[in-house]
Length: 186
Image (cartoon, rainbow, N blue to C red; front, side, top):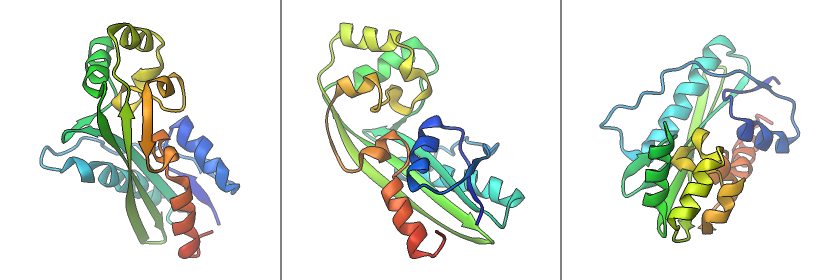
């Protein structure tokens, strides 16, 4: 059975490799604009469904996996920072606080589909201005939701997590494997 990851994220690709099943990457070109009325908790799963559906339309026989990760603090989605000022603003917001990381995952195959969301709580240490400046200058935060990557230098900002570490990286791979096996897709 052909398996496709509908994401260009190198982190998701690396995590999906843990399943030890051959797959290919086809990046979805779907619109990722969110309607303002969408609750923050539902945004990641909705975008994952869009991504998987777009690729599945071209490859209906394949098992297509889409995923999206959101960082949420106080009901606000913290996306990928557009510039250094936004990066520093986000890191200041997260400093000393607990936030939620939700990864939505969707699977499509032959007209069938299912999706789920996984949530992990992440607590940051209180950050100094120097901590924030140093991390922003590293270049790492700019392609990551919430302006940090727990798998890189961003690990130094994290006091602890409650839940699936890989969910914070971008794909709850153990749960995905469980769901795929349960449905006989792997």
